[in-house]
Length: 112
Length: 115
Image (cartoon, rainbow over all chains, first blue to last red; front, side):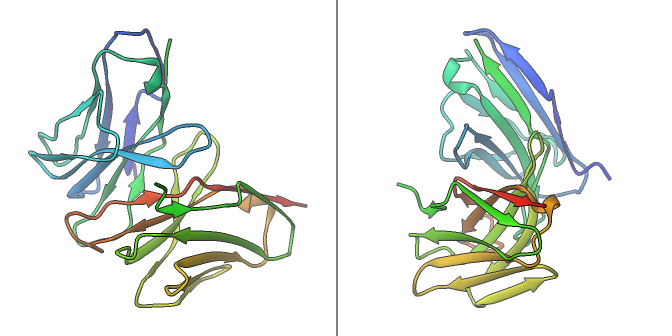
């Protein structure tokens, strides 16, 4: 049972480069989320989606973009990477009507 | 402004003893609370939750207590085991089950259970 799958696991990016963090879930969950976790801090919400074609900003959306063309996939795009985006990124999903959010294993991103 | 606070960055207990992790919140609209456990290099995994209509929820060795008047919740682990050593995050949400449901996290508490 795969659950929420994120790729890549680790990536080093140069300042100004762009990249996409991939996220897919096989649980047919309506809701999907992207969080980031900085050292010693809790998880902060970047973007979320309530279903295919619908996305909304979270607490820290600047510098990121998302799309949700299918129920399964919710990629996170970083344009013009900055050192402040060095973080661990977690994708998550939740079934409609449920309260438990299920997380992927994380993607470690370093911008140098 | 931190809406969910875990004021103890770390906690160390002996195997077999009780571990008590605390969490305070400021937003009175929160109506659902969860605890997640996180091992290094892994994603958070759901542990236990509680709705604001309850004051206690128990699952095996784990019990969560909610004191709404004090805006405080705690996680009790009895007995503690070395495998419980991890970072524990408290999380809260308003709009339980609704489309606008999203979690606000505390900074986490690192629990170390010594053999």
